[in-house]
Length: 520
Image (cartoon, rainbow, N blue to C red; front, side, top):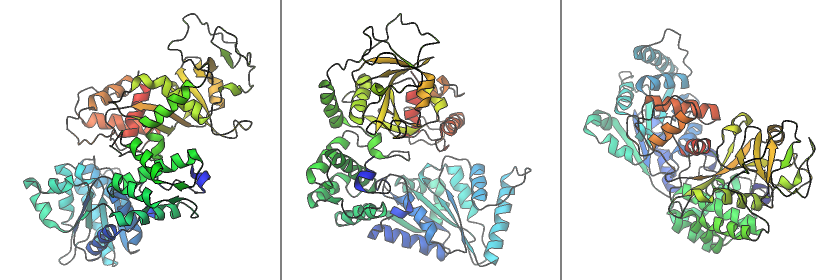
């Protein structure tokens, strides 16, 4: 939203692991040097660990661009897999064709061994990188150890890099994994940025995003960023993103200490800043002080009265025009002819956001974190929504109005939806009307107690029962066992694939936010 205002080509503080944004702090440079040394010297096993949000995945992706052209690579991002699924994924990443008769682990290992021998004979090397390795099962780790046996009398045919959170060190220290742990000869624990490096990190991202030097954080602002983030890159991204949003609202290019302090106060409402989704952070984390400001603004809107229920006897006629007021008092704009644009329903950012929080305010309290979720969705799924949401409208669809514009939907009905105008008046809009302005992007408020679900297959996870029930309610065959089992993983994968998410089988933030929206 603020990218064009500041002259950026893209969001400089997106949370996706884009290697272009890798800032080589002394620690990241050392980690990269360890990786290149272990791979080029054919050390066999390398382990890179670090806290959440320290940039491990970004480092992995950047490593691939530093490898020699003769080095083949395979990157495994989904650690919730079985040993046979691992072998399939490795062979697929290396581009090995496997016939329909391939059914056993031996088939996959034999094909991989032949590929590695041919590659070695041509003077090449091979690298397997496994991200989020702390989630690997003991069986998969043992299979990875066995892969290291693919070697000649002198050289390792494949170099294996295990990348994971700090728990990976504890996992490898288990007696059952002693043989694997002893084979890891190159290790590095990635640390957060030092305070002196934070300015360089922020400016690096601003430049990569296309900044021309017009956006400037003050010295006091950098000090506040350092205190809040403790050098964690993901938290730096979060507070900088929120600070830019505040500066955008105020119409300034200078981000002061006060703006950063406001941003940190909002973010402190939810310290679990680890989104699993590839969207701008500020759109995911609408926090308390912003809501209070919006609700105060809401009180100033004369006539804004949000109804809790529709009138019980409001017949819906099939031949009605696209939009017809549900209020007993005739709307000021009268009835709308089919195809005519009803401008009173097109709300600006502040009005639509205030209305959205007003509609869903009962779903959160001071003790329950909440987020503003933004997601691109195919129109065929909107009818599954069970809670209020906004439809983001493009400039082309509302070219006579100031942008951005939104349709605020209180409830989906069989005929279409209930929309609210700027005065809080409810209108019945047909499905055709909704689809005529559909631009794929939606937003809604998600009240949640835990943003993350870190689970390994077979574990009894606190909120997995709720996930299973939600999947079952919307038609995915998942039994509510309370255990993160194979059936649950497959149900989550099917749901994710249908909705356009990465089908990794992990009930992350966006997966749970969609399930929350689609269940009553």
